[in-house]
Amino acid sequence: MCKGGDHINQKHIELILRVGIFGEFLGHGIFALGGKPQWIEWIQQITGLDTGSAANLLLFVGVLDISVACITLLRPVKLVLLWATFWGFWTALLRPLVGEPIWDFVERWANWAAPLALLFLKGWPKNIRQWFL
Image (cartoon, rainbow, N blue to C red; front, side, top):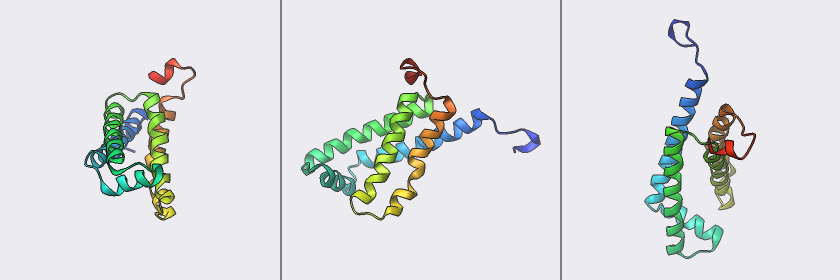
């Protein structure tokens, strides 16, 4: 409950989720643009790419993550939220796949749960057109 008996409504919850998703994807995007060495190694381990190709892929991922962050903050699009859910889940799951403890996956559940929650809050699309709203 807010001060004075006001209650937190759906718009407040949506704003909190948008800010949280923005921070997560912006932070990951900045790390990716910076060519985080550990992530380049993970890309190589998963894909077999050489260092230069893995670094280029990571640069692309960084641009995509920052785009997701900005779109979600300014005007969340359901298709972008679906992508953020998938990508958040995949990047969390990636940790144990490259040898990190399973708890690194568990710790990152909010990375996919927050965009999924916002997607459901905004309403699951009933047709193709609604994915772009």
